[in-house]
Image (cartoon, rainbow, N blue to C red; front, top):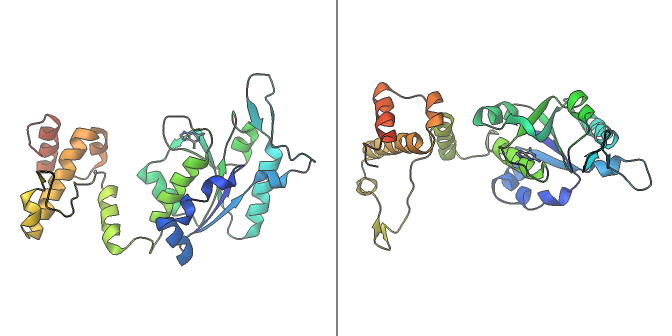
Length: 247
Ligand code: 6GU
C-alpha cells in the first residue's frame, strides 16, 4: 500500500515513521510513505499557502490552489488513483471498521488541514472522504495522519507476526484486551493471578476471555453491542456491569 501525505509541516513525521512497526513495514515494502509540502506547489514569490477568510473573521484559511496542484502532481506519480482523504475534526470517526476499510485501499492521499481550516472547495471537489480521530481539536491534521497511518499499517499483510494477528482479531471482535503480566510473579507484594502459573492452557484461554468481557462491560459497555458473545457471555457482561462478578 502507498500513502502520500500533504502537510505544511513535514518535520512532524520524522520520528513516528522511522521507528518500531511502521519503520519495519516501510523497510519490508508493506507500506510506502511519502510526504509532500503544498508550499512547494505555490507559484508566487513568497510561497503563500493561506489567506484571510472571505466574509471576515479571525484566523487564516488554507488556499485551494497549492493543495489541488499538489494532489494532481502526487496522483500523476504512480498508479492506481489514490483515494483522497481530508483529516478534519468534522470527519467521520476513525474506528476499527473505518481503519479496515482504508487499509484495503491500494493508495491513499492524506491532506492535513491547518489554521482555521481549508478552503471548502478542497473538501467538496478534491476529497472523497473526511476523517477525525476523536472529539477534540488538534492544531493540525498531522497527529491524526500519524494515528491513521499506524493503524492502517498494522493491517497490511505480513506486518504483524501471526501471534499478534490473532490478538488483532480479538480486537476486531469488539472486546478490550485481557490483563497481561510478565516476570516477576510477585512485585512489590503484588502477585499475578494463580491461573497464569498453572500451565493449563485451555483454562488460561477461558480466564482471558472472561477478563476481556468483564473489562469491556465495565469500561466500554458501548462496545458490547457489536461484540460476538454467547448467551452465557452476555450474562457475564451484564453481571460485570453491576459489579456482581469479581475480576
Ligand atoms: Cl483529523 N484534525 C484536527 N485538526 N483536529 C482533530 C482531528 C483532525 N481529529 C480530531 N481532532
